[in-house]
Length: 307
Image (cartoon, rainbow, N blue to C red; front, side, top):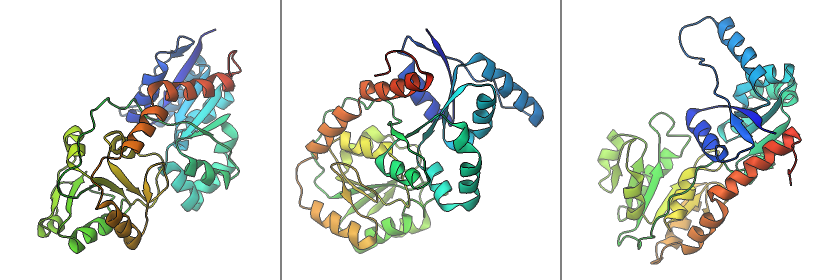
């Protein structure tokens, strides 16, 4: 039996899932109809409705795919929702999102997946029991370089959501510790960054394969997170990580004093984070990720060999 699978969500996330599932002979990936262009809403709804007739299961990334979950449910198609992070934050902190989820969306979904343990625990507070399944493509095979001679911090600060990602904290760390070098990706040069000689803002298109060898530690002080690919990449390169959440072989820190203390601890390290590298290279291979996605789909559909 070949199961016809439809996949929806942000383009980058769709590519990851499709990359993992294309190797599975029992699945056929069915392209979504074009939902772009200036057409009336009823035309879009018509396309989605008839699209559901061509699939056995709709795999949505984030709960915002709810019209497709609804149509799949009405047409008696199975559904999976894969929670990635920001969507969980919305239902926890935005009453309208939480109300909409509990009233409608949760009843349309046959299986919930999450990318990290913290998201699983958060959804459980809403009565949703989700399975753990990373949402990543395969990590590159790289040779681990030595740590740089100067203690160097990396941070991701997008231009329009800097506060959510801890921008004030990162710049304050740079101000307090002029002896530390701070690299920032995700934004072009800012007036504040220009005033700090130890800060380099590398822009949105920095080549990360050139950035990771230059750093000692990634600092990720977000207000909320799922499983950031940057954490896996930094560990893969043998770099240290200070994270506002919890993850194996990372240091935890959310406030400025906590993160500053963690960085002071790492300042004396001279060898790469080999334990972190070994962990992600064994736990987040394409084979491991694909097996989890495959298991979720075949058990939802009730196919054979679901173990």
